[in-house]
Image (cartoon, rainbow, N blue to C red; front, side):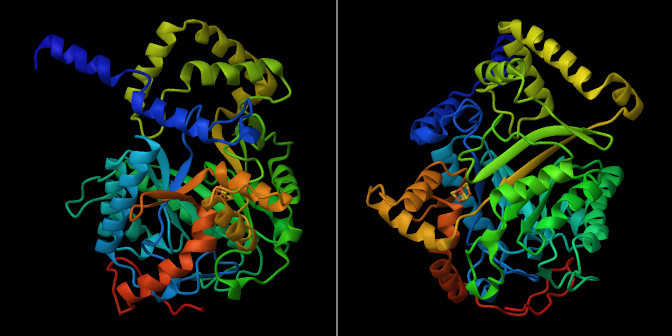
Length: 474
Ligand code: SF4
């Protein structure tokens, strides 16, 4: 390639905004209900939302109460080729309808029941489609499995970075070493063990990671959430996500009055753990009745928000971020390339430097210079609450939406608004549609898993690096 051609290629590659990404965001914004078009709304301004897989490996070898999968899920065989093919088809549709970049969960039953090579191949397929994959797991696997996933059979790195979301709470039964956890605190050594495996992976093989900690909240563990945050915030998790339990999935596993753990009560418990109020309006992901998010960082034992929602100067920083950097996709962009794109934005809008420096000075003052100098470590940690809806509300609301009707019933109307602003989409390549995860689990999973049960009947399988599959309790 000649010099001019090389320069042109570099110019194209470092353009801050990918027109396809911008177009996908504009579509997303246009489709959002007015009620969620708030100043802090991220959808349509800096992303299109999250995605997840479905119908690929619904089986799990732990038992959760509640479990969002239908009763047939554990009667379906985990099958590598099926997973790869289905994920490729689903990612293809997501790529087409939601643009070139997004965060996508590799989720179903238990991801570590996939053989490491199948798991790795599936992640590679997702990356090829511009998806930044996150594997969703119960975390009960060993270092050998993780190493075999990260390194190919030739011992070389297959990935520079892995993302995992690990689900830990005391209503999951069958974890090795702690079959029936007596408390959330009793699970802390297992939370640490999981995070430590990734520290080892980085130390020994140079593979970086991002870890999210997921926890289902019911009235039975509501008052233990703060302790989990306080005890585990420094273990290596970059996100603590709490899901108030919903009446969705396998009804045999609905055990409590889940609605007693209200969103406000759960958020208050998260705030108790963080040691400060958490403003979930600074940035919003879809409808705040579905998602509450607070972005910030720890210095020592204290958590601080990146932006203070009470300070108009910080809110102006947010607005400037959307205005100048919103169209640059950060997701899955290699750090050097991202730096080059951001440098071009800064060169075109030098005012961003002044805005950033003033914000930095304010933030350093807020945190305290002495604290920063003493601790010398800043750890980014995001708090999230995601409130699935009950199947009894989702099914009728979705049915009306399919025929273009808006309900006059306030509860169904709210459900429809939330579904329209859904932050968490799943793809159906067989008919070219996207559905909210609530709809997938409430309406579509039962028939899908029944069909999979015929397609992939259970047979005795060995997954190489994973311990033998234990009997399930369904
Ligand atoms: S509609 Fe359901 S799946 Fe979508 S963001 Fe809201 S709670 Fe989550």
